[in-house]
Length: 124
View 1 (cartoon, one colour):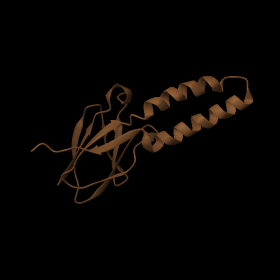
View 2: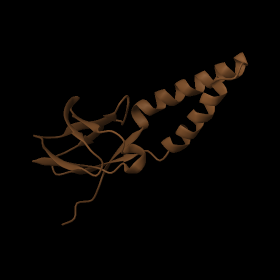
View 3: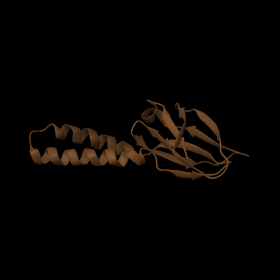
View 4: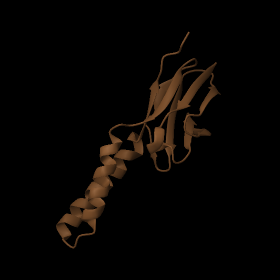
């Protein structure tokens, strides 16, 4: 049986290919709006990543159809990242330290929350 995976990340996430991992092993790279099917023998764990940013692991079973999307909560994080980056350049040590901690927090958040893998309904 197969699992279908479609990448639908739009302009924000469309810059680079996304690596698809099945049971922690990279099996493919997907461009934006690309759709592929993967042969699996039973329930499996799927995750994806783009550079260092990625998704949480999801459980999928044969016959499932999955869609990869950008986490809508990441857009405010990018805006905050730019603001913190500007604050980081100030000469005040306290503001610089707070900005550094904020930037580090955004990086940590993006490691498993930049992309979302959702099961979608199969048209019959």
